[in-house]
Image 1 (cartoon, rainbow, N blue to C red):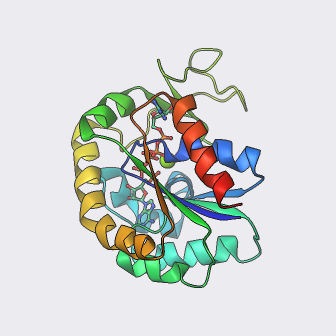
Image 2: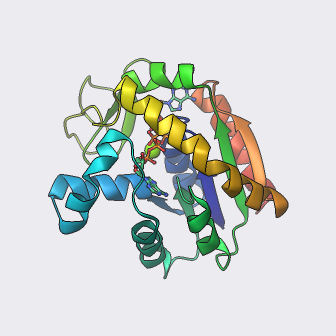
Length: 205
Ligand code: AP5
Ligand code: MG
């Protein structure tokens, strides 16, 4: 199965993709996660894309190359946050995508959500009140210390939202024309959102 999950910043893409990857045995590719690792390790790529922390997108060619090289030997995957631009959408033409899930949410709800988000260095994601870890400040899965993401400041969130809506229209139009899009209201409780997403995925099995 080949899935794509899209949605505004903080809509729950990573949370849902992590669950789907376990339940359906899919390779989870979060481009944002990969790029953040490059920045953390201060690699040549990381140095080029430091502006991500201020809300800008990474260059299309770089992102397209990263995605292609990561999925080249994968039969089942979920792409989290890719494609985000029209240049990127063209890369999916040969991928035989089965379903595109679009999580919708308001900007107001996201600002509240992201102020409570905490992540571990490997990208496991929690929320102080909505999805707390078992031990405060510590990742349930690998025991590392939880941190705030650099781009989770209100001003940066606003910029991420603005860019997201500028770029996503032609992407959604492309997938809608192929009848692949299933929209889910991401404002609700994580378990309800997940059950609805799961139904959509099962339909495309
Ligand atoms: P990326 O890491 O993909 O960031 P994003 O799109 O802004 O989305 P987030 O990861 O912030 O949120 P999410 O939807 O995964 O939500 P989450 O599950 O964490 O990308 C980061 C940056 O990298 C981009 O800004 C861009 O610069 C660059 N980039 C990435 N992809 C690119 C591309 N294709 N092209 C160019 N540049 C690219 O949930 C959020 C919080 O809410 C968590 O705390 C979670 O626990 C909680 N939560 C989740 N679901 C619920 C729920 N239903 N109810 C309540 N709380 C919930
Ligand atoms: Mg994410």
